[in-house]
Length: 189
Image (cartoon, rainbow, N blue to C red; front, side):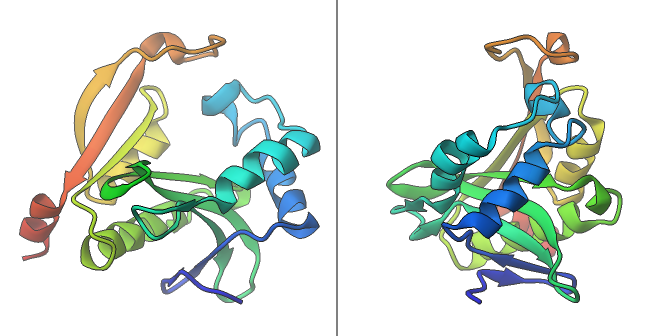
């Protein structure tokens, strides 16, 4: 198995173009609690996972020299936990990347999101040439905001995004968090 990153409890690996990862993603995006802050809890169809989601997760970003999404598995058991995003905002530059995560409900509250996020931030600043990490979520998504804070990101702004369809909580807007390489260095010193 190709491994992008390993932590004490996690393995982040590239997604594979095949039925196994399609099934994992369908199950993940089929849980209304997992997608609650993304689309109001609507499941993603198998066809959409196969034709839209998986190709996005397989994409290699030239500026970063690698993919932007990683399947997360429990190191000890190999169980699929979800995925992490560490994707450059500009295709040809690794300067600014977006951090994200989507984990199965069974993995919530166990520190996996924070552990994976911290490891990606560290790898980005030490190996990938990243200058700034940014992350966004709905203002009401308190758990995700807490992960961003624990990963070292700080609140930047609140804003109102364009939602194709309003979902519960979207009326409160969204928030952006960020961390620069300089701030990361100061914090580690």
